[in-house]
Length: 175
Image (cartoon, rainbow, N blue to C red):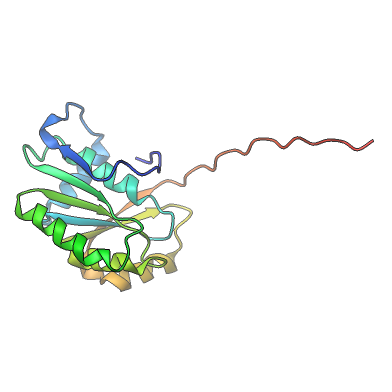
């Protein structure tokens, strides 16, 4: 499920009926686990700064594509949102929901970017993105406390991401 962490074009529209590929069994189970709780507006919050929230949101869109039928799923990258822009974006996303769309919003870590909190609180549910071997229990617990544990619909756990190898430095021996 881990993918390139570069941001997608903002916003991304996914017309669910257009997908011809079948998601992995893990992604299908994720979709149906989310479907047990009625939602139209879902936020994905990283358990710690740098956790794969965008990858989690992308996985949700991939998983839901064959099952959402003609309903559109809108992916909104809200990373870097300012406190002044958060209320405006909440209203914009609620308008999308009122038009029959589903919305999945990627947030920054609430530990380092509290301006994301209004979006998490406005959503029908919050999904926690955790990176094995990287997320510490304290960060995950604080994130749960900021939003309220009752608002969480679950978590997605990603394996530890491998660090990219550095290019070797030119070493010159001094004579």
